[in-house]
Length: 255
Image (tube, rainbow, N blue to C red; front, side, top):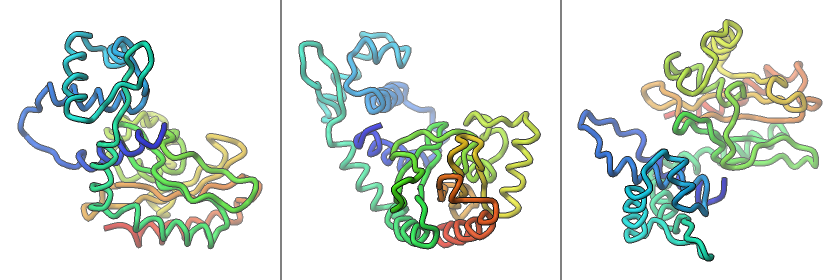
């Protein structure tokens, strides 16, 4: 996922917190879905976009013409017309980012965690049924473990476990969490009790990660901080100490 796609994540997050009882406009929903799909697949043509969205091509063509006229997308060039995002989503997303302040506040805590642990630190957010890497401060070690910005993180990872531990099970299931697996539920319970999550090689045998959720004033998870390291540098004897550091950092950032 490239920079423009990351900017669109910021934009979706800024719009996603508002819930209204009014019936949504299907035309607007279709346009937003098109922007989302273009961000993920750009540059992308009409036919491929219609397949990705399961939309009628003629209806989708009208959406694309409208988005182009409004300055949200542009032709990518070449013999066949393919679409990509303009800088407009990034401009809107930057304004939203300044309004929330989560990245600015989190970056200082992430830098401090890296200095304290020597390992990579990740900021991840729940977005559209996925857990996505929003920012990364990489370890200074030559060998390090860190996802790239925009990477979709696995359901069993430390970021997902930290966030899931603070969500109702029906929401966890909507993210693909294995809510019918007793061991998964036990792990969520352990995470809630101690305040930090652990993925000790469950996703990749070479990597271990420890995370904690950032909560809004209502106690709902809005992000997760994660320390990620090669398994050989993060043995069992360090779990509790690093877990306490990550938990303390998450508490300092929770609203």
